Image 1 (cartoon, helix red, strand yellow):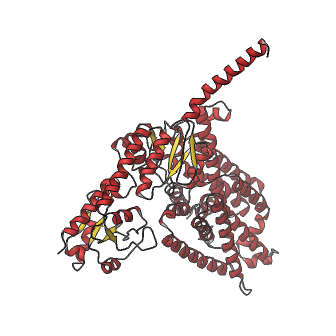
Image 2: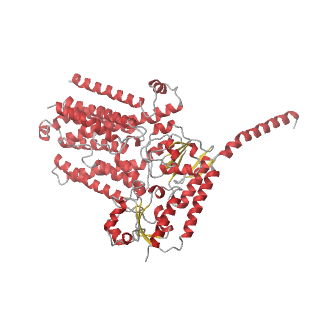
Image 3: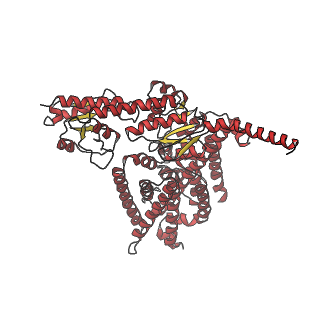
Length: 323
Length: 302
């Protein structure tokens, strides 16, 4: 079993390293590979040093972390809700985060406080959906899904209202935040460490997740304590998404499509899919962000455009081939 | 004090004095100015490589007499024409940080609400002096030009230009101080229909020309309004910007309302947006045009 798990993961790890290398090597200022290498050996000019170490490397790592977090969160949500349309944002988490961030901006706060407020908003939304879906006892994934979708619609309305009534000079900042972009990430480390921790935690649970994905009855019959398991998935997916949204705003598409792509290629074994999602999601976003930086430089594209342009044909091809 | 001590003291003072000589120029050359975020920005010597991160900032730096020192601009920096030849570093909403750093600016002029806060913060973290501006009144335009001139060491040209603008506006203000009020609707945007309130710089322009902004009391700086509200307000003159310089079609929609006073008197005026919508010295020309249009409206009264 382990033998069949390892090769795809190794391949994906290699691909992600390659993507990161490309991302660090290219940019709107042309540096030769030799110059980039010399930066890492500490004998480059200060400008090259800054370009690679202060701009490209942190941004590459942030893109990887964000993509990985979103893809794993999406895969978990799809297992939890047993719905192929589920993505990390389906339960209203990004809406809660956005409202938190916009409120902080309206209050005139900046920087770290906006991120903190976004994180708090995401958690508040999670708790709200959790509490409401729990209701008076009977709890099902479809009830969770409905609660989440309605709460998300509510957040959407609040966001539109805030945009409509907030002073014009706050608007640009708010719109940037809502669009989501890796260039706004401050530091990649919390996201990367959290992604690693969750992957290490979740892989041993892979067998239980596999059973759960087939349905709660089978899972219960096979001795899985379904309820705690489902809550664990919910909380983990929420934390992953909240971390990603706090880092780079709500970047769409990665969380929905990467898990599906991997399932089409690798089959639906969660022990493999979850770590593979972390690697493939990260790789996709790193590549997309690299293209966003250089395609029409010095113009910079929103990364969401590129993720969709890269992802849609790939996904459609895989889907077409699989029939 | 014996002779040796005297010599030592002499050497000491000579060294101290020469140190002072070395130090003095840079101390004297240091320039400081307070930006619109209330941060004082100091440079050891006047800036020689300036990056202007908004089209408005580019115009203001040129107005300050420091156009020669500009090494980086953003999209739509189309005035003065010389600005078009300066390397671009993306748009004001998405900066190409690599190109910006490559141009090695020693002063970055940011736009308080127009540039992404994270990217501006990153420039500060990388040790670049960032001067954030956002003029919101006529006086602030002059004041900003003076502060930019101070930082660029071009006070001679900059202060003259700032003063020209200040005096020009003061003259217009005096000329129209007792003019008959004209109810005005200023159309910033067509779809959705948007205008400005009295707090806005264009609102200030309307008041200066003896106009009475029919939406001046609204709370939002740039309120979104309905066609009905305009018809109810029944302005005597409608002035519109537009997307391009020769684009008048925004005004034709009002011809459908013949009972509107502005339509009846044919007081539908086009004002080139570049002359009024950027807080730069070109506003003097825009304000003059604005006042002239209102004067035309006054002349068409029965």
